[in-house]
Image (cartoon, rainbow, N blue to C red; front, side):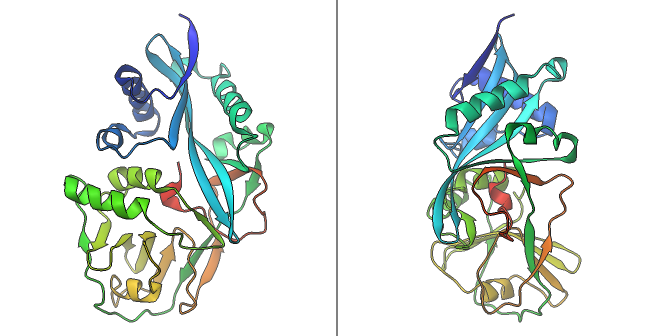
Length: 291
């Protein structure tokens, strides 16, 4: 059967279903609820090879803007790279990535992706360079407070989904050193699929905090703000006396917190970048914008 490269087909129910089947079989993830709740818009596009009505290989793109040291850069993230088992080792992923680079390379300042060790030798062939990431954290004891009254958002409740969407679209950067300005679309996917039971909202201050705890560690995966707030006070409203470390999966600017940094374990999270990024930047790519 003839093979064909297709893209921008999310409104095609047959092809979208096949794409979801491939992603489910490959990664154990699905995009259908994201689509049905109108949270998948235009920044995430699938570029796929199909055989008949079956999607057999894919690489998707996310259209972003970075802020790096106060300057805006256009950025394209490649993700959801996958090929059906029957069609592997036939150069299909290479064909799609070459198509994406030819289509977008002159349009974007930065093109990047994440990969694991099993394919770490593959992407440098396209001109991508490995970049180290650094996570920030604090072991300072943050005093408890009751300033913020967080409740859990329910992703089965359409009113709560609407709150997430409104706050997410209008969010401000958490850091002028490095952040993604318009990464809310992928953040919505994370809220439906990865952190579904870990999204907390303060109605009065219009703040969303996505966090989990692991014994004596508080892991803050994202803080979604529409105006600047005091991070120390936010942490104080969700921490407990047992917490000895607070880690952040994004970058923040907080003069009143003793911040430390550590290199991110690269085993399954290697960042590859093509373009001018700044290799000496000690930052982390926000996890909720990571495709």
